[in-house]
Length: 437
Ligand code: URA
Image (cartoon, rainbow, N blue to C red; front, side, top):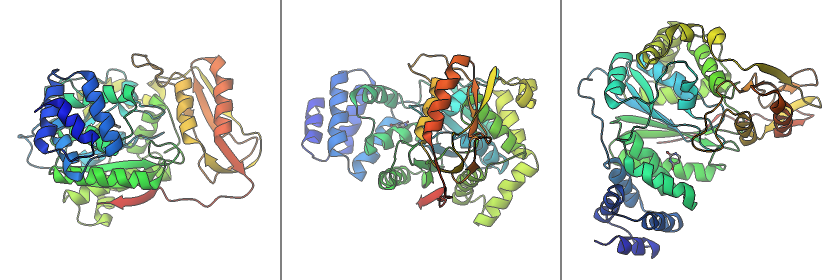
């Protein structure tokens, strides 16, 4: 087989065989392919798409490019995970993993860093002193066995083909391709040896998929491919036209997640998304027979303190300082400047440019402007308003947390501009938009 013939076939809109795709990915991973050939391949896929069979073959070839985890020692619970396509204020993974562990599941979660305007689970965990997101597979496996869950970053051994192809797509304008996104996400997830997966496909102005048709197309592609690869998968389309929860920013979001796990306070939309994604996995894996039973089990993990205990076990097993964790609200990282942002008029919050709010965190140093940048974990927003809230010139839209006093004015203005205030209360849209099985 010749790589250029494979590229040519895709360029001419012909169907590739599983053997051709596997050959191409093996050649690329082993360094025998020029980057321009890999780039040309992604551009041909970007324009001409892939059939279901091709998408499955690409996902399996990329999954098989590195190590595949197995879970021999675990027989008393299903191996499950969730993946989100990325949003603003999305801290669901931090709660979902220990809640499912407290229900008897095992959650080996390979998470990512912030991408574009969206936050990343790893950056949130890095705000916890001592927590190691960069551990080897043995430590990862040991933590999953002991704590029921572990959230770490991608290791060099898992799906190396994705690492290579993603870097090429990033600089060749071929990221936004449904077959390539599907294979990229699933090759990493499936290499963790999952039995059940739920996808949270974010949809709205703070998501990569802004409209529901594209989001549905991606959800179908991922569910079909993952099910074809033997991992039972369902997807929920969830709203990202406003921030999820009341905080945005790394340490601030971790604090909100810890409060949720301790049963202290829960934003209703954040609670609905977290419960729905957890319930999907409990139902699909047989840990609950009905939605009501799933909900009752999940609520019990919070009221009994079990979910919080699993989080502490996971975090301390991965090196977190238990004293800081126990008193994160007072002993965790804190920004020196915290100020309210007031609107200039009174009325109801009618719309939020959620992407703009995510960019505000980057402007405050809480996200990256270049890949190697050290970020500032303390910055962001708290008590963020929701659509439908009544605000006036004495009721803040949110509080800004900043390390640098000079940044406050500019970011506050950008947040004010991101929020539309109207005279009448807007109709509220649901947070769970659609389920795709
Ligand atoms: N996240 C991934 O892991 N891969 C993509 O292609 C897009 C989002």
